[in-house]
Picture (cartoon, rainbow, N blue to C red):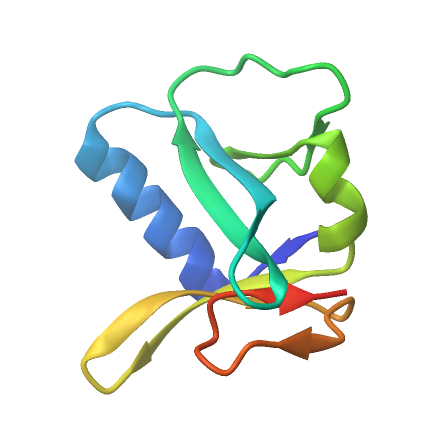
Length: 108
């Protein structure tokens, strides 16, 4: 299960409306950084599920996760936070063992 906070849900809905198109987001991980993995989020313009995708459907949009990323993201909460002048999506993942000092990548 992947959970989105109210703030994250509002931001995703706002971004989809601003874009003028879209049915949801795709969450995943990619290999990068000093700790090995980084979170990815991209907007999906049409629902074209790929083999092995899981859809964590929300009332207003879909949240797709590919099969490779599923094991890394299970139990994660996605939030949208503002800290000072910075704002963005924050990933709270119980599977993380370590995060690099700059906060870009993580290890499970």
